[in-house]
Structure formats: C-alpha cells, structure tokens
Image 1: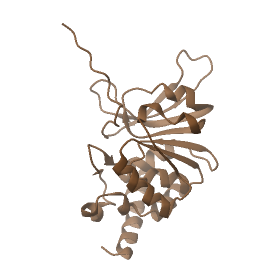
Image 2 (image 1 turned 90 degrees about the horizontal axis):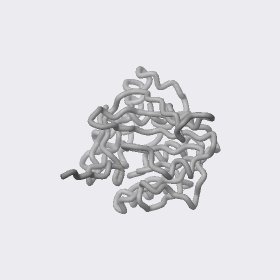
Image 3 (image 1 turned 30 degrees about the horizontal axis):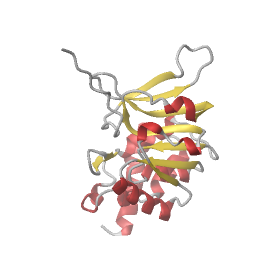
Length: 222
C-alpha cells in the first residue's frame, strides 16, 4: 500500500470508526488523521493498521485498536503543556499522539525491541518525546511529577508509584482488570477526604492484555 492509500485509510478510520463513536475532541481526530499508525506495527500487518482491531506486536503486547486509544486519550482530558507519563509506550503511537496534542511526554517501556521501534517512530513524528527503559511498575521518578499517568494496556491494581509521582490535581487513565472480570477503562483522581489515595471511576469495558509486570503475584496455599 502506498502513502496515499495509507492517508486515505487514516481518514476512513477517523470518519467511520471514531467520529460515530462520540470521539468529539477535534485535536484527537486531527492527530489520528495525521500520525502514520502503520509504522507502529509489524511490516506484514501494515495493511491492517487502520482496521477496527488490536494488532499483535511481540511477547503478548498489542497496539490497541484505534477507537480504544481515542476513547482513553479523550477520557484523559489532556491539555497542552501538561506532563504525561505513558506506561507501556511500546512502539510509540500513543506517546506521539499526546505530543501532537501539545503535552510533554515521557514514554516508559521495558521491552528494548519495542522501545527501539517507538524511538525511531517518535524521532520522525514526535521528536520531543523522552524515552526511558525500565520496569513499568516503578514509573520514572527522576522526571516526575506528572499531570497525567496513562497506562497503554491493562493493569490489575494501581502501582504504588502513582501516588508518589502524580501531581495533586493529576489524573490516571488506563484499563483495570479485577479478578476474572473483563477489563474496564478507568479514570482516577485524588479526592480530599477520600479513604484511599485515589477515587476510581469506571468508564466502559474493553479488551487488552496485561502490561508486563502488572499481573498479580501468585499465592500458594497448602
């Protein structure tokens, strides 16, 4: 598929998948019309880059379906100038989208191969993104605090680093899976007087694999 056909596919993705599904933030729509998502997937899958489905990357990781990314980013209510930590940034698509929206982006990835692809993509399309390779469950303390922590995949509980690295008025967005239930998109904020560090609001059900290091620890009984 040549560049013109990929550009046409991007416009069809926005007009046929995103706009009819209540993606109303014009900045997100324009960003997803612009960023070449096909460069974030394996070469043999590039013709499916704009299909309404998640695409496998490696080691159980995926590039989430376009609508899921758009819904989560819209739920994050991003504002230009904010500092966002993208946890599990993989091949860089969501990190680049936040950069397109005018945010300062720190992209955290544990897989060296995926990070190399993501860095290459962002060097061309979002050169201000700062990449860090480390365990996802630890965040990036050296560059904190963050106005937004975005999990580009599924977790089972909010990691402890969120409380330490998020600003007082910050927001956390991602997918959360409790027990055997389907994952749900969520938004979490601090609330004065609340008994826990964060008040979590669940938004909608979705499917995505767990991010590395985010599975619950196994317990044994005898």
